[in-house]
Amino acid sequence: MFSRKDRPTWRDRYPNEVTCVRCLETREQAYLDRLLWCDRCRARARNRAAWWGWVGGLLFGACVAIYVWTVIRPTDLVIGGWIGTLIAAVWIGSKVARELIYGVMRFRNAHAVEASPPDAPDGPGAPGPPEATGS
Ligand SMILES: [Zn+2]
Image 1 (cartoon, rainbow, N blue to C red):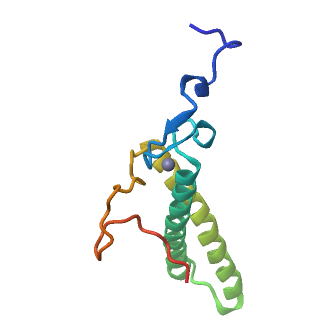
Image 2: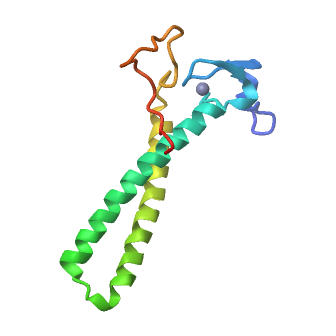
């Protein structure tokens, strides 16, 4: 057993070049974290979590809206305040959902989900990672 003082860090256990478990590309160790995700895979997972986080935030906002409109029944005088509340609910909900989704992705630590086959056909219907298209 190692004492706490001279315990090697997790990086010492790996060589300089490490294969990322997500995309199966060999990267320099400095680009990988302790789950062996490279920086690109972390960024992609973050992007995906952010996108789904907005979906979760909108769903949460819709629930709040239903609650406000059916249970609280706001009057027209304070409608602006309720709209602000809904926007805040969507925003906070998206942040919470994003962190949850990213945490789940990290926890499940699915292997090779970002890996692309070496000779993937480029034809229509070719399976590929769902990329958000910037409009
Ligand atoms: Zn990777």
